[in-house]
Image (cartoon, rainbow, N blue to C red):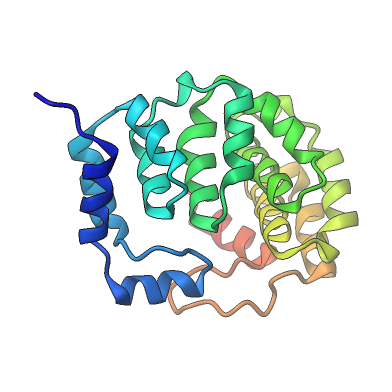
Length: 221
């Protein structure tokens, strides 16, 4: 069976372009018009193809890069590769999928997390905080949770939007997962009032940390 080429994949993605999907995506900073369900269907058919994934990433096309995160082999990337890819990622969805579908599955996730937390670029730092929020849930033993709360308390209020969102997620996860720190997490959330007035659809949980924490704790047995 002949291998799928980049040109063939790009033609297929072009055929899936939907102006309505693009309009919705562009409101969130994502410059593509491919329905994500359709994109996942393409990935399911292609399965894991590391070389093709790398070639798709190099096109710079947002839909192609999203597809690349779904068909790549995360453990095949060196730390320097992943760092470069994060800095190349131009849209929120690409950064999100890169962190969640690739970096989190990489053996370099923790070293990158530490490096990115200290990065001067807020978009890179936000990826570090996203990985840290994941660690709060999965392996808190590698973290100093009190020190994280100190940083959140001092810096979240004035952080740029993407960084503020990631720090707020980390704050909420600390409050949800660690009862001994819950009161402090809620207090920080209440005093900083970050995302308190964020428009939240009916039947969705507000990202305002005190509300988010209370709702997630309420749902637990």
